[in-house]
Structures are given as structure tokens and as C-alpha cells.
Image (cartoon, rainbow, N blue to C red; front, side):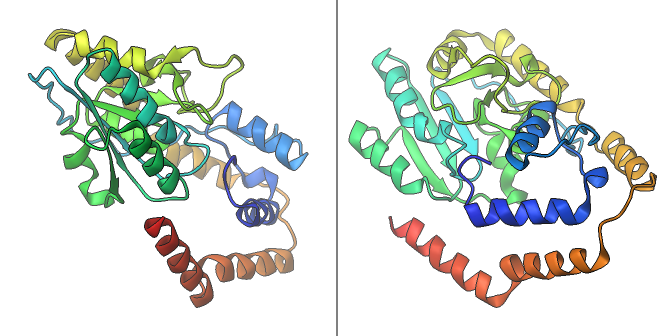
Length: 284
């Protein structure tokens, strides 16, 4: 929840209360624990279901070029601090004599700060803000890069394509735990018990020196990790949970929260506010 607007955090809290703890699930233990602390509520009864993604064919192929092209896709928000760290990481790689570029797809409140950092470091040709990426264009676009750096479902979907995927860490600008396949199952970027120690610049430098065989192995390991997050298993688990008998919150409370949520997210007034905010971000 780091970096989210306070009104949205509160709205999600109300929604969770209206649904009821017995009908909530979390994508990993770290996520459940953070919500438990934030809401001051015992959520131990809530099951853990890993994020689901669709199984698609691997389309990535290792490049024969010496340069390394990195890509990230996702909202440019505070907890995805690696986007803000990307200019520093690339600058460090360039200082080491490495030919590295990083394209960042997405919009959000960090856009202006990232742009300023890029310009300050003088690397406008090496780190580019590409704007939003349509979901339908994700596979073809991402598969054309050498490395994916990100978190959440975007990291899983990149890995499913066979793109070697480094999983970034929440609130960390330049450090992480490593490639997706070395993280605990279900964790796609959450902070673990011990803070991360691996520098993204070091991981990129190591990849830079790898041959085709090593890069292909990383591709296979990333995809194998992503294949564990299957949609059928997830659907079965959710169906089982929905079929269990749990005390339901008051219907009036659910209706009131639902109307409030609809107004805040789908009403004409909400859409006008979002368009205005987006214009301000893009003009920053």
C-alpha cells in the first residue's frame, strides 16, 4: 500500500470489511501480514493463493548483439521505486563501460521525477519514458528486449514469454533479491524478512557478460517459475473458498460500500478527476 492515495487505501479497507475476512485471499504471506498490521486485524483465516496468469507460448530469443536492452512495464508509483532508480542504475552501467538502455512503459505520479533524474544524469538516449503500453501489445513488445525488471503480474507474464526476469523489490530503488526463479513461490516483489542485497547494476553487468547458453538458461528458469502460477489451480482454489460457509456481513453495509466504491471509481465525476490528474502528470 506504500505510495497509494489515502482515500484509495481507506476505500479498499471498507471494501474488504464489506466482503468479510472469510472471503478474502492474499497472494503471499508477506502481503497478508502487511494488511493485517495496516488494518489492525487478524487475517490468519484468509488463505493464500498465488497470482494467476495465462499459459502462453515462449517467444523470446536471446539477442546476438553485445548491448543489453532492459524493459519495465507498470504504474509509475512510489512503491515501484525501481523506476526511479533506473536512471542511476543505467548511469552506473555506462560508467562501467556497458552498453545498456532501459525503456520504461507506464504512467503515474513518478513520471516527472524520473524524467528529471534522466535529464540530470544526461542519459536521455539510454533511459526512455515510453508512456502507457496497451495490454494486447505486451507480448510482442516485451519479448523484443533482453531483460525485464519489474514486479507483480507483469513480471510473471514477461517470464512466461521466456524473457529473463529480474524481480524488483517494493520501495527499493537499486537493490533486489534476484531473478524471479530464486524468489519464494508467491512472492513477486514483496519485502522479505531480510532486506535485499543484490544490486541491479551488478545483475545487469553479469547478464552483459553471459553467452547465448547462459542467457537461454535464465530464460528457461524464468519461464519455469512463471508456469507455477497457473490459472486452473487458482480458479479451483477460489471456487472452493466461495463454496465454504462463512458468516456474511450485513447486506445494507455491503450495499452502501458498493455504492461508495462505484461512485469513487466509475462515476462521471471520478473519471473527470482522473483525466485532469493524468494531464497534470504528463505535462510535468
